[in-house]
Image 1 (cartoon, rainbow, N blue to C red):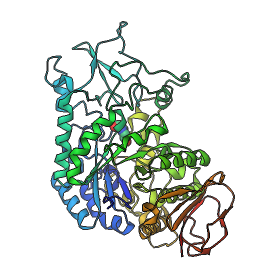
Image 2 (tube, rainbow, N blue to C red; image 1 turned 90 degrees about the vertical axis):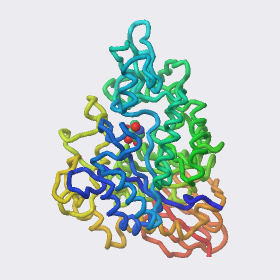
Image 3 (cartoon, rainbow, N blue to C red; image 1 turned 180 degrees about the horizontal axis):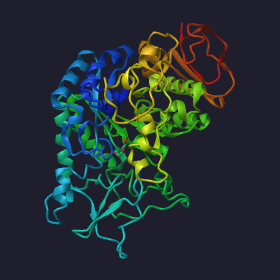
Length: 527
Ligand code: NOJ
């Protein structure tokens, strides 16, 4: 018997940007609830809500100051309960985000920890004495710029933060921290959450000796945090061997609730992906390379095939999320980028696992163009050359009214140009050829062909270049990400094209040698 998520497709919601029910410029849980009929129509089986907890908002919610309460800008616990009840009534599961690597510096625990070395909460966080020269204890850098250490003048010790200084990292070698998180998981499961997306799941454990990370390449632009971060081999601050033990424990906590654990895990190499999902630890992980890469089809397909061969149902496939440039833009922009985006997503729908769409991806949206003065992301506002994430986080375009239907009259928290009718839900919903309807069709075809996720995957090993094909039972998925149409030899029998990401040959019957259009994916079934 499969688990509830087998065959499911998820949908990520950034509550701040989805729908503003009380017209204060911030999206809220009630706004999400009011849009559930849309999500049901689209055919998603689960929503993942980015953090809506109490937070001062330095990292827009990924800096949690109370893990058991709702940020008033997003509503309250009663709104959460209503959202869960309504979603469940529509067969939509609710996955919440959990942030175990760090809290907000405003969290009561950190405020206590700042009181001094003897405070009982001191050891909830990571403190180290300065290096002999008085500087940070090692060479680790923050994802968001600068060192991963900030000096607490009062105690003379540094605290560790892989992100902002306002996001101090927990000390996961302290059993009290593990106990706190067990209780937090149970709190949300008791309220009806169907699982967790785990933020920086690969970051919680650190090298016990806090050794320097080896530097791989020289740093040219020290004001670009991602260049600085990527100049190092993150041997000692991320993806430690014992990280998985944390999730084995969580597995036991959530199993009685039938809840899913989905890790945001960035393993150091492809062969480390599978560690997180075997041994009864996480159920799936987000494998994020396809959500970061520019358009390099053969590299993309090599990686995807390698990862799928290592675990067929352990991956939550994504090409978009709230941290990256939208795939339609990143894959080349214009209509080409939109075709590439849906072609890759369609192929991912035949890769087992639990794929996710990101809000607006279903509309084929490109990144928004924001004025520099309106940027909100600390990566952009705190670094000279930081590439922030605001362009993907602008409000969901529902229609052409105020703020694209996000707020009735308010100006949204993130100011961006209004989108035209053809980029909105209203403008695409009636058009059978729209990106919206093509994504909807994809979800419905996937559901109607269980072999696409249940049957054993058999990769075709012909040298296919920028293309790949996969047979699962009585289905075949072929993706041709090259610039030219290609010929593909079908196994014997007559095959019907059930889904075509270009919407050109759906329903056609094929046998023998078949042509696959350029930058397209076909999902076919055997008659
Ligand atoms: C990953 C999240 O997706 C991102 O938005 C956040 O800034 C960092 N983790 C830190 O929590």
